[in-house]
Image (tube, helix red, strand yellow):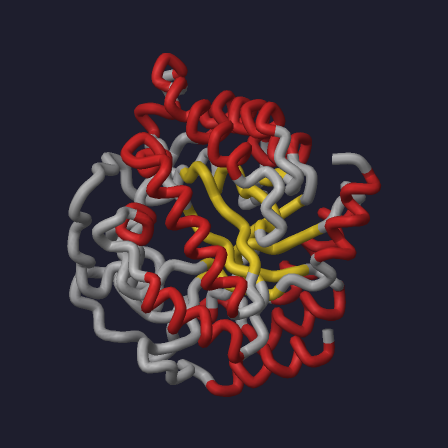
Length: 324
């Protein structure tokens, strides 16, 4: 992107505030998007909850197998999702690849959640085996290029998060070749929206992410002092900043402390989770099977009936949206 594109993007999206979104009826990316389990009614109802507290963006994960299975169907459902989101004043940031959580993704019926276990069914895309085998990247290239070219001029998409937490799951620097390829393929698609991959660790992977990204996105699940320090460090790159993962109530990343810091710094923020559901993200990382509901939720804001976990939090979102 040119500097003018950067300025235009910042003017178009002056303060993004939102959540990582998956409907409460889906355990993972495949269950969210496959034809048999795509759930527009729940998506509509839950995005209305987001709208009610002033959220204006959702970060949403895709999966490469969805494109291989039914590309035209996926395009139709993505457009349907964007239509629903637009009705609630919400734009989208889509994620293409992901190194987090479980390998061995398979199309079709997805497993039931393991009670009490955080993200028991979340899927890597494409998974470590494929990440480490460039001879299997041709379908990934087709997926990345065709998705971005199909939606190249879609004004309801704020950007493309090409690769979530590359190097996670013990991959380390082995994910860098695919990370670089993902950006190369995306550039060839010539989409109008900015490209990014969120900084989540330190070292060689982070350097490549920052090098290649049009806007610098990042994850911070620590306290507000850490958040402020990271924002100041990342400002040195001279590009728009957007936090695409935060909210870890157990370690001081709370709405009460962090939302004011994001607002005061002018940095957009997309916290993890909206409605407690099949992903079990109210439970902490490493939670054990059968764990009781924690008295303090890890992620998420609402129960399925629309009741807020903490009404003070939702009031703060409304307050800062009115200030923006």
